Image 1: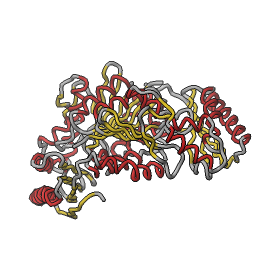
Image 2: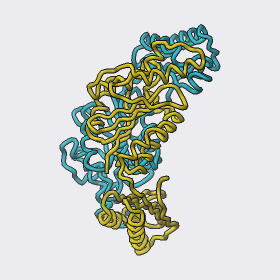
Image 3: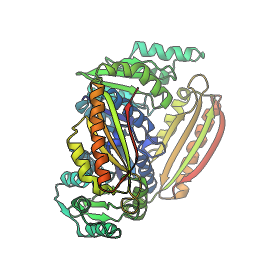
Image 4: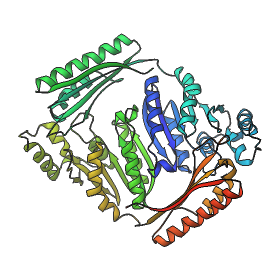
Length: 269
Length: 269
């Protein structure tokens, strides 16, 4: 499976004012496309961003970043990306035209701060922003792809859906993902741990088995155990997940658990 | 300012099923204590966690991590932390006693999966878990502190408040943090960008000036500009922030903006 890293720039995220919903949204999109998301990193908008981007591009096939594309002094993502890949920051004609048109509509001139939004790493393709003003950045380096989008969720989502997803689809294994959820009452997670491990072993990645404790481990244990599996073939993915679910259910019941709910469903669009 | 990294382990975060509210909550707590939070990283619960922890401990004064402390096969945070700092994983007597007592209350034996929760890197202090079962880990290495807490928010918060915060207070600069919020209508962010930059320059870290676009940059611009400043002395922090706010308000009005709201307040507990 190709690997993806998500990087979210922003001081407001680092001081905990804003919860990183962008990160989770992108991670889900990438997972559903068939990527193995290995990191979601909130990073500061200063020089340290360069090393974060460099590491990401050395370890991931695709990186998606958000934030730092606007007109203010601390919007420096394009600069950091250029440094990370060793390219110059240049005025991109296509991006400048996108920005110019936005302000022209309101009779506003192209000030240096507005022009700045068209400075992209050499070789980038600007991503149109149908919702806001700052264009995004699409850059391919040594077969790896970086897509940078604004931090405003409405802009980020629209741009991802329209312009990034179609490009990522070509790099994704085009898998079908199934999941089973078995909610069990009355058995501590520690009691089922050996079974969970065994089922996980018999269902290697891209198949995950995870238990999410909902109640209290000792006093009132409730566990939501999920089996997620993917395959190019939907029947195969579903069968794999159903088999894992069946074994977990049987073991849970054997240990005195009561199955409150069991569902098997296909993930994604 | 001492630096802090937050690391959240968990596959359910990486596939975007769960939004990382733990990360934001911890980042806010650390900021209010006077730490400079430099990263919030969602990382996988496999060998890559070792390098993430190693890097964190080489760059941050304090790291707080969540997740991976339970009884299942993929709860491996103690093991990764031990590897990251080059220590052995040993059964901690105090931790074992905590775990034993929890299960004994319900007449449950100490199985290997339950015992596993008492395996900590050599030299760790277990953090009591008043809400759930798995103890946390507190480990000091070369003057740097790592605190690992469970991923269940109720357990994480209670343990942080009771046992981690008091320790961190001794390592924090004990600052007073003020913030101003000025909500301005009618001026594009790009127009105010030069002023924002100037105010930011005249108020160096730990003072931050950030503008958050709320409306549409060109069609209906609404900006929430924040000035956050800290100092050991509360009067000084407040004065610094008020001065920044005053200048931003004046410039916004000079550029035809309408101030919808202006507030100055102290952050934290």
